[in-house]
Length: 469
Image 1: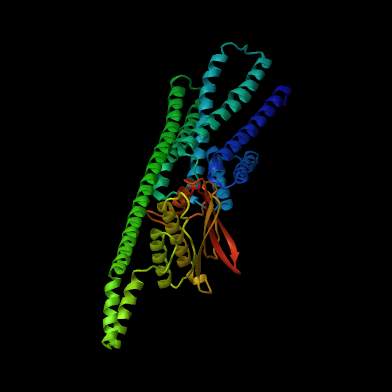
Image 2 (image 1 turned 180 degrees about the vertical axis):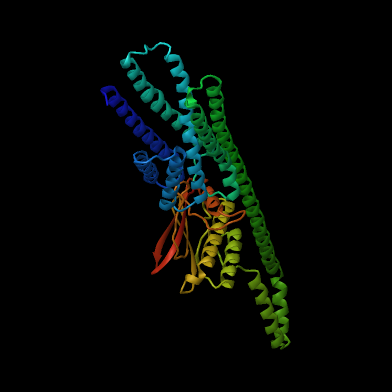
């Protein structure tokens, strides 16, 4: 081996390592929004780099497409092992990375072919130094650096169009997102196959075909990327509109629920006014019965009057008719389901707070607590309980809801809210509605597991800043 060949080999090895490291770095950038911790993205990128380095220096030949499939598969496996949520989304991430990787480097190859065609006209055939420096600069700057900017830019574009969100996707959404990338993978396999057939039959590399071939393949590669970009953008717009529609459905349901509570409260208070209005007649009737010595009839009349009074009164007195109705209804629901309920809630009467917002907080918080206990009722050895407290200090008002809970509480790193195991329309917006109501008063919510009186509980705290009226 002469000296120049030795130098060429060094540049070739540097190029291989740079290519792998570039792909590994872009892989980490690409996977970061889909994992709950930054270090996990670096683990996925590191695993890709390690596997590709091993495959590159194995003593036997491995087809390029097979090597890239193995690398993408390792990224998917590592992501799934270190973060077991949203597996279909992670599979989409791995497939799309494979496609973006070949598109970026294929564009570089086609562009470099045209550059070489122009440069060859000015290089002296026998000047090995000129050829070496041409190879060095074309490899390091024209290939590696150009490929890095292309792949990094492609990753950033797709992340922008997708919205950089870690979220569950169903099978239909996975197919919608992955079909363009899967077609890109198939296209890469077809290109590799026909390149192999051409080189076998003609004895020349397909990259020696300049002009129309390069232009056609370059256009096809760019178009493949545009299709992926457009698909992810349309998916995000559709997903956003879907979430907005679901939010409107939840809001409409809340409004209907609150209207029902308000109507019930108005009816109960109307009954109270009617009782107060008729109290004189009731007293007159009782006096007449006692004067006539009809004590049994007077006792029966009194029992009926007490029963009517009980129906017209709340067993919860929070200081607000709307919240009274909500708490009374939830208390009755808990009694029917065998859930103990302790309530020390007081409405902030002297504060500038809307009963509509407090009602949203109470309704959703107690509904979530009841559903959580229903899901884990078989795992709870003692009688499950829910506790509701409120505290007001100066302009700070806090509502605390705790319920028996022995499961794991995993939170979404983006929203800070727990992951929901519920499926179907309307699920997953309860806590978001509570947070939205709290932030209207410059507040927020906190959810955590705590030990309350020796029992594991899930505690929701809602903090509001309410100015004095």
